[in-house]
Amino acid sequence: MTANGVHGGFGLNVEITLLVGGVPTLTTVANVLDGSELPEIEKYLVDMTPHTASSGDKVWVDSGKKSLNSFKMVLGWDPEDTTHIAIVSEFGSPTPLEFAVISPGAEETLKFNALVGKIGRVTKQEGGYQCDVTIQPVGGLITP
Image 1: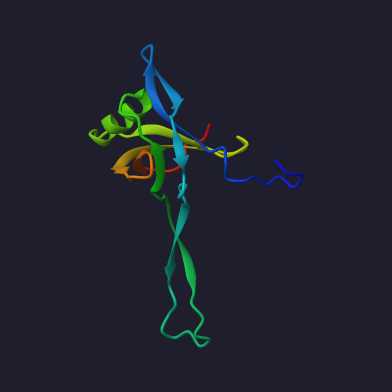
Image 2 (image 1 turned 90 degrees about the vertical axis):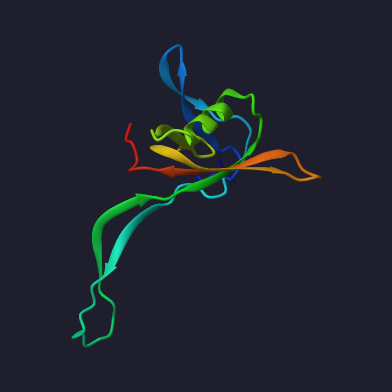
């Protein structure tokens, strides 16, 4: 960490819930190469500008709805790794699992329940065997 508290992007940690000895445990997903689009927290605003508005300025109102948007991570894919097997299993399941995204420096943790929305394996001739995984949170943040 630098003196003003900012970090580079290296050091992201993503965790998925696995059963360890029968106990649900957040476990680090192996080989995360990139977490290019971490979950955005979005508040839905509504344009409520009346036709009679003399200024022409939009009037925005908080709708009361919020959303954790989907995000993508790129994995160095290992089909025999337990966390990668869990991602494939979650893709086939209608039941969300708890995930956590931990910032570089471990100063911020976002926990949420989510479904795996997309799995896209990629194999380029001059690259490694990778998998693009899209995670869709299904509610708000879980507070510790």
